[in-house]
Length: 153
Image (cartoon, rainbow, N blue to C red; front, side, top):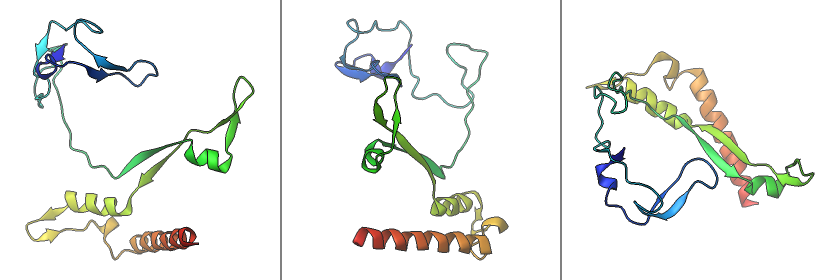
């Protein structure tokens, strides 16, 4: 199946999460056959039936992003000399990444989930006056000061 807005595309890019599977400059009838089933899949909504299996009903849920993954590649591992030995016996830089949870995002999520016409209704566990909140805030400020002085030196 294909979305109706993609039928007229020319020289488009497509691919997957697999190396070597991306195509740049693709065209229907050349690199790919135009699927026979043309649909409006961009406007799928909760309660719609799945086109490939009408017994399945599309469900949606609201989510709040409080953290995300940073794909760092090998920039820092090269600078630090962090390597592993490949099957061919060669030293190869590590591919790095990290996961970050933002303290300010946690506060935003709490507010987004708990408010009324009068304003914020702080959940007890995340109220700004709780000791844990202040500890986290001070810890982050301390780390920021150290990073700032490191960068300045």
